[in-house]
Length: 277
Image (cartoon, rainbow, N blue to C red; front, side, top):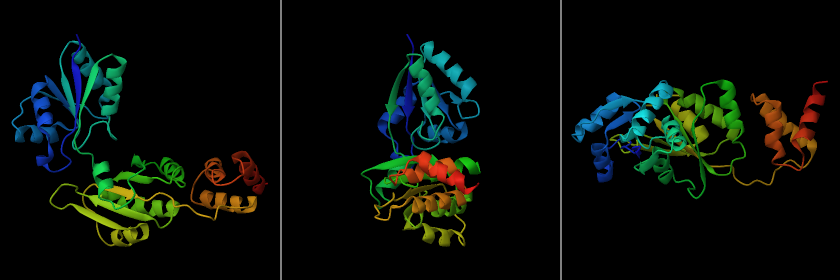
């Protein structure tokens, strides 16, 4: 009989947030796989939990995942944790859960705080409908395509970002989204927890002179309803060209503007190509 994989959430900063169930689960399993064993060792030592640790991260997920599945199939139980928050959210743990599903291995969740949901709750922005977008790619092309696909998103958007990339991300967001409301949440549940509710232009102005510290969760309002959707194909093409000038591929730009108009993507694309003749 195979064992069980427990997906265990850990505190995102304040160790007091851990649950009794999480502690009990970590004490009961045969071994624990962690994103960074050094970080998890500190957590386990604090609660006097002595269990073998296995490294499991994006760079060794393929081989390590196979070994974990073999041990689970042999009857051992395992808990997967991440450095902070819920495993599998912008985290390779999702691959291990998928492997368990493919191999018929039981998976049990032991939930705890999520930085994304915690930031949304205190953002002051609409929480009725939202989309979690994780980290933007460091590759410029993929980064621009990601932002372009969200230009007409009406739900509140949640992103993760590292401090050294924050100002560049804010500038790119301003280029695509315009001057929308944003809440920048950092060091959540820690001593220096801070929530800055401002606009994208205000955030850019601040962090052009202030060096950001700590990991950030960015919560941005979705696109508000407008009455200025292009009425003519000329206006639509003008908006397509504006997106193209920002680095968006022509086909993707036509797709985005087609959603706002009665004109089809192919119709817009044909007009864009004719401009080049």
